[in-house]
Length: 206
Ligand SMILES: Nc1nc2c(c(=O)[nH]1)N[C@H]1C(S)=C(S)[C@@H](COP(=O)(O)O)O[C@H]1N2
Ligand SMILES: [Mo]
Image 1 (cartoon, rainbow, N blue to C red):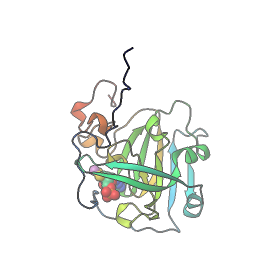
Image 2 (image 1 turned 90 degrees about the horizontal axis):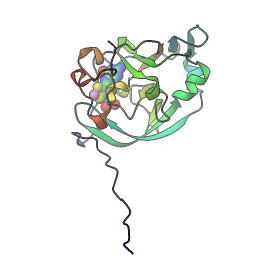
Image 3 (image 1 turned 90 degrees about the vertical axis):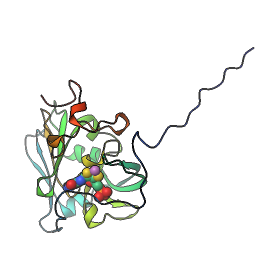
């Protein structure tokens, strides 16, 4: 009898075209905002289930149950930071408290100063997508998004909005800051979805 060999391969960890740099770059557009805990709020708006806007103050938001996610981080400029331990609040926890209306298929994530990134609900809803307050067991550094940044580890890192202040549920897809400026609407690093000219029918708003 011929023995059948098991198919075996290692899952690659580095998406195509990415490299591992020395150190850990800090990248963002514009200035680093100040954090004012007395006035800070996270808004959940747009097509909510109740039709009302939800607001979380800093004491409310920071008291929500925490989880930990181990994930790699892939910037479209081609560096990847492997094995980050993010601590924070899962999108599932937020959505249970501030649910979307039926029919919401997209989400706009807003940072300070009007930075934004859109993701599909299926990407927002992933188990690893979270609001991160900690990186490697320490509060996130000011320039990395303190007090809260989004982490969407399976998409290019421009979707991981720093200094996040609002979540907007969308009935129709809309482009965020970089998506309007030539970057791919979906941004899957495994498919090298870097630029909007690569988008196929149905991958972006008309
Ligand atoms: N608010 C905000 N968030 C942002 C950005 C930005 O310009 N503003 N840049 C994004 C990009 S392009 C990257 S690569 C990551 C960088 O995160 P880091 O500075 O922790 O490496 O933040 C993302 N989040
Ligand atoms: Mo980036």
